[in-house]
Image 1 (cartoon, rainbow, N blue to C red):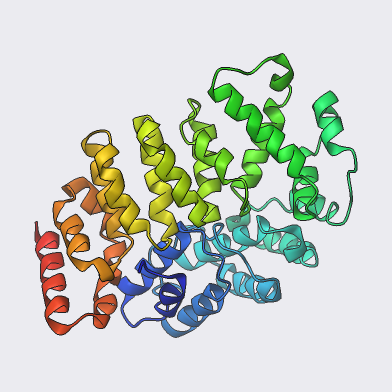
Image 2: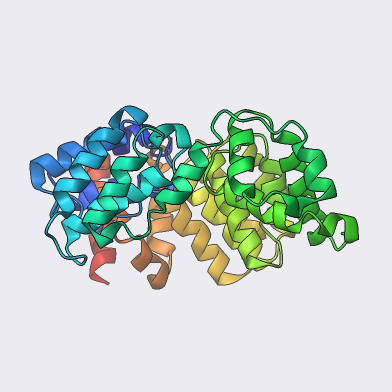
Length: 365
């Protein structure tokens, strides 16, 4: 069984800073939607101090911010930033906290835009927070655009605030036709079959992909998985994030079907999706894909992704991946491997001792 979000959230207050940091890193990387993470962050800050609770504090824009905690986020950010230089770790944590709110669904912060504006006046650490765009997004919360698909087909340039419009219609369940048409346009481009009519969707398609990097779009996995091998890296990378946010069994089966036909970059992106998701059965799939991996870089990426599943129900396979992965790949795993010791408490004593011994031997290499 792969490592669950619930287990990671439970370790955010662990007495070991390495365990806390590894837990937050893994949660952030997997786009967790479990809202229990934020109270645990606050509890760790209160217990250990924001300076020391999570020394390598990751971006929080990957997380969902609970609406009921926005006021507390703002109050904490105000206290954590006042009088502190921009390079101060506590001040930087405050900045990341408000950045996460700024990219949340508008309903999350609709009653707090003015307070966030006041924060921007207090400290330059909030310079990435665009409160004007937040205000514009709030203006579309309940508005309908009944002929959106027709307007975008005939005159897409007529909608100047396209992201705000698409976001609002998506959140209301009214953007399905537009999204499918936009992603299909990108897929036709990938296949070299796009014509001038589809070209009119280029701008719309890119905005739809931007939306996919911010929201969990379950049901669109088939489009994303095709676009992982797009020749334009910005499109392929956005599709990778969109697919990783879904975290569904469908994602696993689609990657399994297409992996052998991907180019090397497409294979690496699909492995990154699997690595982030930590979906049950991922470990088995990663081992299956080795037969189709192109070259040593892909093989090492497959093993590194398997290590990060922490699937101790297949302990021998996990230990083999840990031992065999090359040194550059292992170095990138070091931070996340800080979580191993508490996870091995579930193992028989002999297996725990052997696992920790092999891990220490790799750290010494």
